[in-house]
Length: 173
Image (cartoon, rainbow, N blue to C red; front, side, top):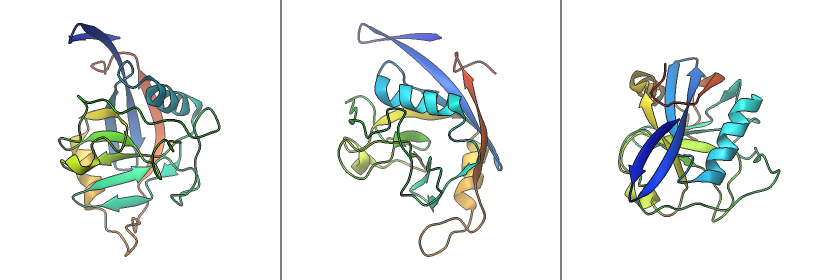
């Protein structure tokens, strides 16, 4: 675990590496700041839920979305088999490239889907639960953004999560 002191609170963070067919993306997960979203994401990662799933939506300059085992953008569920509430934290913002958030279909409808931003998008703040950020693998995120899409923002060639490795210390290899 990594300890960070912020505003007299101690945060424990973990990390995961998404091993994709375009390379690895290492994500720091904000466990103490957004415990439900973090628990859900880490448990789904640990269970192999995301293995061999595709990123079904890719919008250059905006974001890439995955986490739906059906690959359609309409599926997926949380570890609790139901939707769970948003965890909006004032200090977590969509303030740059590589922010990781829960995708949803409205307030308090989080399941298994998530997205990574390609740049700052402050209009997403206070709407989507931010639970992590990219800390390594920027060249992979660049490669993902370059994949061509159809008129529905679906990648023309699959961008696939092959497997996930969970790290207790975000700075560990």
